[in-house]
Image 1 (cartoon, rainbow, N blue to C red):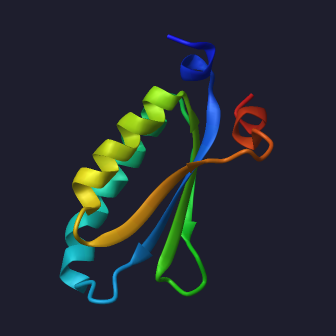
Image 2: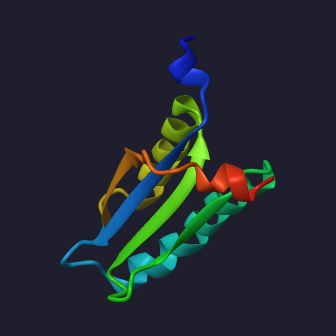
Length: 102
């Protein structure tokens, strides 16, 4: 594994409701998303997440290796596929979560 693959970096997932998002689908996936976040935090990792003011978009900011981020995103994808639009990006901002977690 390269240094880049094992280095902890900040990541962000941006989520947007699809135009035809069914409220029942949201109620169905919300507990699954919460379980995914709880599992992440149980491992001692921090994550900030929440909705924007319009309640149609959300964000999750977390730190992990490239592998951990991909693994989290794959689980998120299985939960949200077909219901929400979402993308994950490496966030090149100051690693604030590392500073705050110490």
